Image 1 (cartoon, protein in one colour):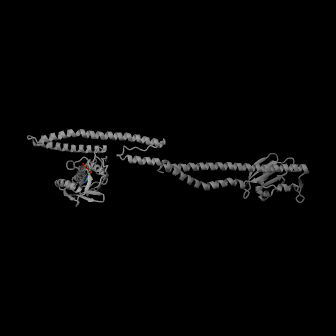
Image 2: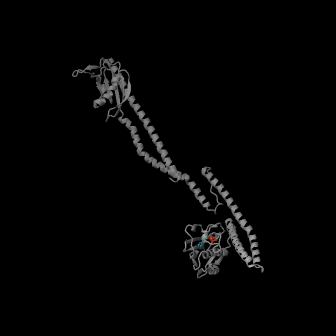
Image 3: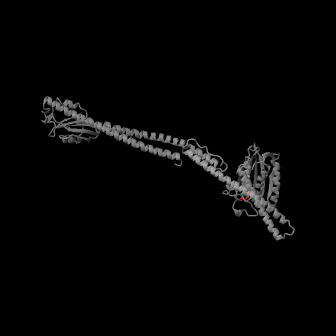
Length: 490
Ligand code: ADP
């Protein structure tokens, strides 16, 4: 259950099942009680009716009990017995000495052992009335009875019992239980589904917010804000809170960029002064070779620092959107010729063979010439820098429908699969042990800048590499860059 909507639907189902169970139980118990109450009323009514009728008959005709000539036992006079026969259910009439004067047809049908369950209460009832339940076994089942004394119907009649089988009636609530058991899963299924859909509907705005935040938090879109719904509910509050957080984040990012830009800018002038001072000192005629060596090293360091500061300033400006592209139509072939010449010279120094596969016709491209040169030089110097002597670096280009694909392939040391996702990050460098200072110096900003240049032109840059086998950087650029190819932060 990983989603809130799943959990909501599950708890909704459990709650509903619980409620349905309690509801069903209450209905069952209430119904059962009512039904039993009705049965009791019926049994009492019948017993009272019998008692009253017998008293009435006694007053009208005298003794109602006669002696059966065949058995010599007392029985009910034939004038009143049809009346009792006409009463449905279980009727037992007894005399004071344990004589059974009348048994209804239903009572006669039960076994003697069960009949005792009715006889016992009626014999007991010669002084007080009582309600009770007797289990007569199938098919009668439970019988609710009312036994009461009969007064005023002569000495020979003591008590009467009237019983009604619960079979038909108690079944009714049981039926209800079966019906509920059959219907409950369907209701549960339907309501869980409805609950799930409702939860999904309710939580949809949350998904929307998550998507929006994801789109914003890629680092470039901190100026964007979430659409805060006018509902004034929790989600509106969440959106407002997130917007406030985004505003704070944007301010800190801006401050950070501004600081980097200002710091780099402030460092530029002293570095230039430093460099020209060292250059002047180097050319001084009275410099000793030892001092010359120190000055050379310092100049190299100062140059490296100046490059880093330039790169930082450029990235900071790009982040702030203050590094616009100067788009013009350039011939890629011409540009490739230019950079490959420089690359060949660098390759010669490093004993790396540089080959260029030139397009056989001019490829006109809308781009910023200086940025393009910087991009290609970054890739080529990296390729030469990370390729041991004797290796090769190849530049290829191909024109597709609306784009040009430039690839820079080397047979160098390669990049490990764990490092590959980070190479375009700022200040990221592979294992320092692999990049010996001096020979493979760098600060790890080259590829970050390259990525920005490509993306600002509306293109993409990817890298493939195998450790020890070499790397290939592929740049894809649209022939017509997006008109609003304004600088955007990487
Ligand atoms: P650096 O100034 O260190 O060259 P980059 O941003 O140009 O910075 O490159 C980042 C890291 O990516 C490098 O330090 C290096 O580890 C790795 N890298 C870049 N190009 C290559 C290549 N052609 N072959 C092997 N590793 C490379």
